[in-house]
Length: 389
Image (cartoon, rainbow, N blue to C red; front, side, top):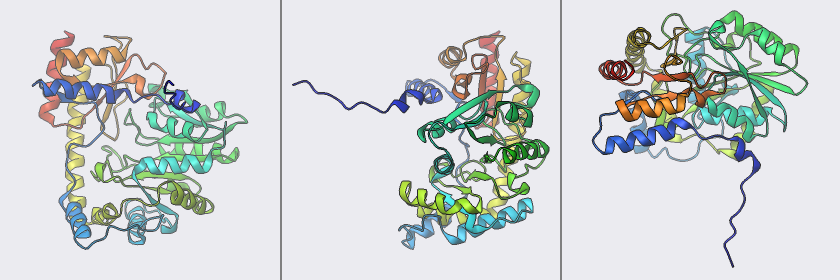
């Protein structure tokens, strides 16, 4: 009798692969043959975790702090996160509204799970981080990408939200700073969108994963406008703890119990040693390291943007945060996926195709991540110059 394998759920047809991971795999194959590869494709800081955090993690392990915490996380860490909002933003956040999660991905999944009913819609910018729409689909919601361009710094506006809201719309998701564009949502725009969402009785989710990594002016947290918003943050980017898998969700007070229930059932708790380690992220010693690294990222941005423009890429909006440049490559291609593979094969420079981030003009855009040294970025631009010209 032939083997009959189980069918997969219909939702899987709507969850696309992350194309950059295929490109990364090819880059690793080339590197294994001895090729020199410059990685400008993956959004992971190239700095290792700061020494004070590593020391705190080792201490937690040595002391046997490896059992479960409560679902919402260590009380001391929740209080430290709340104190950080007060210190950095002048905003009072109830530690009881903070849920520590396995990465920001865990926080985004919880927000989607708590909010979305089957068939309900969430409005997002197109382009945006691809996993956001997949979290929504996993929860049987529908992600509605709204095309945005340089005229709005690739961000939604109150007018766009109001125009696209319909009877099935439940939520709006913003990212500030955003992946792949590195742009911020100005406070007045954030407030305008919040008022539209309030008027429709919806929910606002704001991804602030790259807070801290801003270069020209401080980022303003959405919590400054009130506690009726879901805010997602992470220890991965600014705090350099990618592999520790730690983030947090700030939920509106009436929703905290539901978030906690979902956390208990889906994820149990965030990694315990990582939570103890993260307590050291708020020490003066660690914050001095983060500031030094932020300045290094700014130096890389200030090199890379004009360098890319000089060799023919259009960068219509200067990225204000994160560590990405979203560049218009239409002078060279209308197929960003094939273009990125050609660039990798012929130059050894790995970059990300725009098709990972949505549909709107995705064939003409590519993303550069300045998560490698300034010297490597200079080498990468030289290789691209020779390839293109």
